[in-house]
Amino acid sequence: MSIRTAEARRAYRVLWRNWEALEDFEQPEALVTFLTAREGEPHVKDGLLAGLVMLVQMGAAANAFVALLWLGLWPGLDSVYRRCLRRMESAPAEVVSSIAASFMGLVARVNLSSVHRVAATLVLGTERDVLKGWHKELQAQRQRVRLGTLAQADAGVPSGPWHVPFVPRARSFNAEVEELRARLLPLTGEDTDLVVSVLLREEDYVEAGASLGLSPETARKRVQRALSRLRKMKKKIPEKDFLSQIGGWGCFLEFVDFETTGRTAGGGD
Image (cartoon, rainbow, N blue to C red; front, side, top):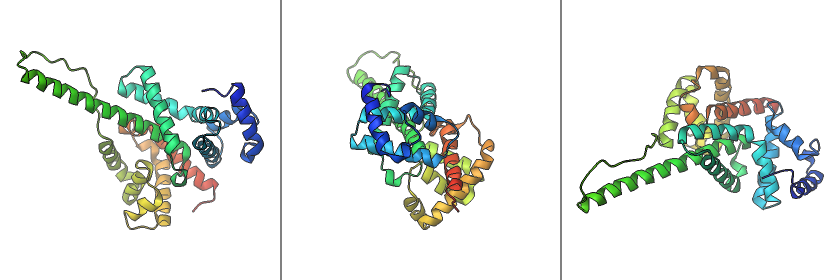
């Protein structure tokens, strides 16, 4: 994927002429620089990313706009790569391939109408899907080993040491979510379940609120209140523990920062 090919530049030029939001980004490199910079309004970045996702889903110059999405989210995706490389203990090329496949699958199916923060959703979702796919493969591998052991016994083959390839321990996604919930409980109190539902389980405010008998607006206010507290107390949460395994510490804090900063910029409650 590249934004420097003649085809990609032609596609971007057409887009720039017809999309007012790109007025300040005449060249694709300028857009990527803005999206990857620490400064800049999060809600503006999310609007640009959402537009790119829509274009990819429509099939419009898909390769060019996928490249812009990939590069615009590179800091987060690079963190995903580094965490997955450590945890999965796979070859770098295999990790990159898994991330690319998960990212493309997520971009193709994400429902923007139910997404509150596009950047965090795509980065968190990519890591989640990569790790879920890896965990599924581990389970299948273990099952093959068990079946192979049974087949050897049934055939009367003399028993000997069965060499099982080293498999790192992996917990289920639900187990990790529950551990995160337990760690957040002292910080977010009665709002913990709402925070977990929105951040980790990707529920919208309607779904998250309904499960607790709350209106969507009440659920939104309580989640934003909890995220504001988390942003102030984030140093109390251990960086090198389970948070690095569920969407990543950096992505988790990015989501918290996006929610609180975006709310302030938009003149929220």
